[in-house]
Image (cartoon, rainbow, N blue to C red):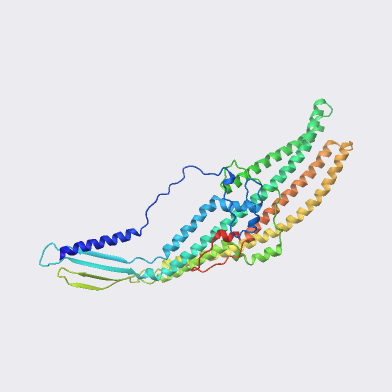
Length: 469
């Protein structure tokens, strides 16, 4: 009887082992890339307009043609290397939700004692199973925290995408304004270069002295230096654009020469500040992180329940007496009632609470300060425009006077430089105002749809789709 029972037991154990192995995952290597993969051809960029993007049917996404601000922002959303790697965090968060929702495995124990001698006739054996009851008690809190964390990852990714859109807009503004200034400097350089050339010939012929030729030569040198400095800035911005899209540094994208940004409406922006937590993804992420921490505090309090393992055990001794009964393992909560972990989780919750309040205060303060600065820039811009009209009129009259010999070369050059200075000042003010408009749109979430914070049991939306609406 004993000899026939052993093969049956071995077969059962083998079958159980095979069943477990069938459900296991297998290892597959994922080798690292050993060579860089920068995109050398802009046509290879992903050009899919995200669902819900405003004006999706009218967005021009031909990288070979001049891009507008929306088209460039879409390319950044679809091709930015940091966003691509950031989206991998969603897979990690989903896996963590899966892991947190799994029930703890029951434990199976057993032993087999082979009879080697003595008056008995049978081998002895015992078998038992048990389940950790404490893990079941804290399971709901762990699952809730993991779901909040997964939603937080979505909100963090949405904020990362929104910041990438803001950076794309800033680069677009800087590039267009710098190109405008570059054209302005080149136009004036042509004027001063022609005068410097005539002064050089006259100086070589002895018709004028060095003091007379100096203003033209100095003005041309100053312009050349400004153009050289601006060329370096333009090249730096182009490299930033390439890096934002994962392009090779040799690739040059072109932009349209207009910037279509809605005018600043202080009343609308101040009104948007009241709904900032519903529009700013980073504030939503902090709220979700706080929700996850609340679940962790609840879980730590539930974990005060002493460790309890419940199950059953049975067996047979060498006289073939069969027994079976319950098995309980219970911790005595004398020294450790999880008070340390409770204090840690509560302190962490307080830190997140303060961080959320500080972020809110800082955001409102930044936007309010920008509104004040925007009002000042608008007044200064209006004053510079008025001064530019006057400087242009004076420069035109000076040109006519110089042609008939009523003013000298130095006075003429000085008046032309005044007009150029006002033109440059106006471009700089326009660029600064546009930069602040982009910054305020980013800080207030203007253009973002309201963010609905679902409960942990609800599925989280696609952050890319939500951010594009």
